Each structure stands twice: as C-alpha cells, then as structure tokens.
Image 1 (cartoon, helix red, strand yellow):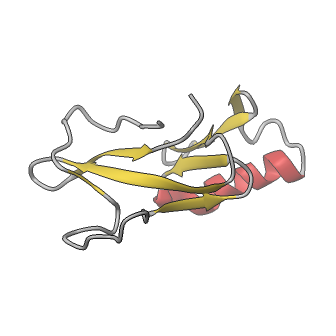
Image 2 (cartoon, one colour):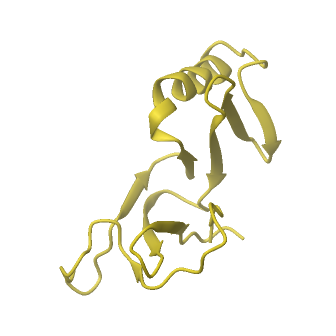
Length: 118
C-alpha cells in the first residue's frame, strides 16, 4: 500500500476516485494501469515541469533532474512551486486500485494505492 500523507485529518469515508454513489460491478475497481511495475504521485499543477524532469532523467541520463530515493525510484521537484513527483513500485504490471480518503467535510485528505509490493 502506498499512501502519501497530505494532512492530519483522518479520512471518513473512503471512496474510489470516480465513485460518488455509483457502485462498480464485482471484480472491478478504479485505478491506473502500468506495464513498468511502477506508479507515481505528482502535483498536477506542475505536471509539465515534473514530467519533463523525469523524461530528462531517464532519456538523457540527466542525474540532476531527479533525486534517486530507493530501488530505482525517483523524486522530481519543481523548485518554483515546491511541487514534486514521487515514483513507487507496484510489484507487477496490470491495473492497481486507487482509493480516496475524504474528511467529514468532503475534502481530499488521503490517496491510497493497493500494491503487491511491501
């Protein structure tokens, strides 16, 4: 399980990202697919800058574009906004379920990705 902590509030309730009152059929989940056994969390407002740094890191071997954090996973930082992108291992290819934790007021307080890698 991968869970970035964005605040101190406890989630109540947990929901799929696009699941308001809609129920998915059994065996289905909202999530993301990967064929590289990896996922990542990023600040969408800085996506162009962050994804550009990741591309430079891998495609141009620009070691200054990202910071290695462990086992081949990286962190990219947009110094202007303070935003970042962090990659993580899922443990395999396929689609990985994503859950959103919301505060009692409905604000997003947590995101969890269920993985097979501990």
